[in-house]
Amino acid sequence: MKKITIVLVLVLILHSLTVYAQINNAGFEGGIHKNEMDYKKTKQYKEVIFLTGKPILLEGKVAIKIKEKKLEYKYELSSKDGQATLKRDIKLERIIDDNSHPSQKIEVNNILDYKEEIIVKDNGNQTTYTLVDYQFHNSTIDDTQPIVDFYSGNWLGTKTYSINQNEGQVVVEITGNIYGYDHYWGATETQKIHKDINYSLNSGDTTLNWYGYADIDVSFNKTKSIEYFENAAYLSSFDGGYTLTEQEETIMEYKYDLPYLNQNNIVDGLRNVGNGVERFETLPTQKKMYIPKFEDIKGYWAEWDIKKLAGLQIIDTDGKYFGGNLPIERQEFAKWIVKAMKLVKDENKPKRSYVKPEVNPPVFSDVTREHPDYEYIKVIKEKGIMNGVGDNKFMPEGNLTRAQAVTIIIRALGVERLAPNSPFTTRFKDDNEIPEWAKKSVYVADQIGLVKGTPEGYFYPNDYMTRAEAAVFLSRFINYLQEDFKTYYRDMILGY
Image (tube, rainbow, N blue to C red; front, side, top):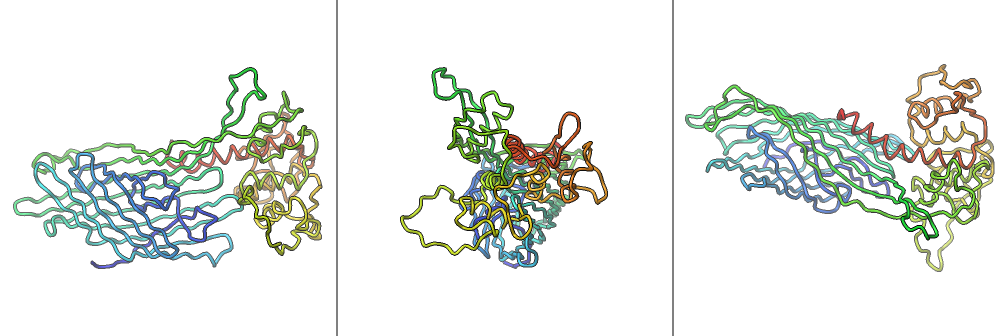
């Protein structure tokens, strides 16, 4: 078999691994697979082929082997009626450039070997399509921000199949785009693929030439949702609680415009136009969340947001009182963010009886390794989410203003570019009181719905944020990560 060069991409998702892996790790054929986040296992797989002149849904398995510098796909598929089968093997050499930029990675892949054969039976006849040439080029860039990875890419490809060895050929030209993100509260990857199919058959007395095309939209989604359930039992120590639900789904929508072929394989001049949808969903996993027993939040305006964060163990629940009207301290806000985004791993991992002390220098001059929140402040500094306040000090017990809190969250997202160039004004009536260093963050937070201001139109940027306000703000941010990101990366791209 001839070897050609093909460039693919593997989009980064597993932050804690040194071996890079992508959300869609079943290739770029336009198919979908179940349990897509579990990249080590053989998966159920679906794909629609169009090279015969009509759409054929194939189902089966795709086995994937991922190594640091090598990737292998092995597909074994068939139609439900058994009249069509597909076998495909792809081997890729991985090339990752993650040294040229501190937060960006570019990945390309070179094909080492390929093999594909499709057999279709129809009215007692058997036709074999053998892949004899595969040209493919793809490149994707991954931009890693403090709490989210953004990535996008595109590709061009041409697959040439021989028909029964020498009776003709089918050429499938492929263009595609990919858009995605990955963070703790969810991940979505959307692919938009277009295929042009040119069919040419010259066998004996049969000559047949036709053109058709197909558009395939593929979406891979991992979502986490939080829902409150009332306790139906009246006589109980609690009235209800939150449940954390996690689910994965993959959706494939396709449209096609192909020739109409009659029983004699003659094009009648009519077009076969249609569409279809296929999907996989995993069984949702559910986990009950802790129920706080604060004595000062019942009926309080921020009760439900406080309960949600406490249930997620973002807020410490050791005390009897929450103290919603107290200003939130910088160290506490840092801790809440780190816990909400799971930036510190294995927090509850059992400790051995003896652990060799680590040599950890002070994060800031006023935050030594003996500080109870050292690990949280350390990671929030390393991620570039919160900075010091002069002379390398953090002021852990200092209060946090509303402008500072908003700036921290937008910096964590890495979307300051959405603000216009200076000079500009926000919609708030006290815009002139917003510090210049916070202007872009406040503008962006307002545009994407993370801040609302007062009913009178004021933001009060320099007022200290209370613990209750911080809980509502962070709860709103988590909801934004759960819902709005998916809207941007699936619904708006696919036109839902």
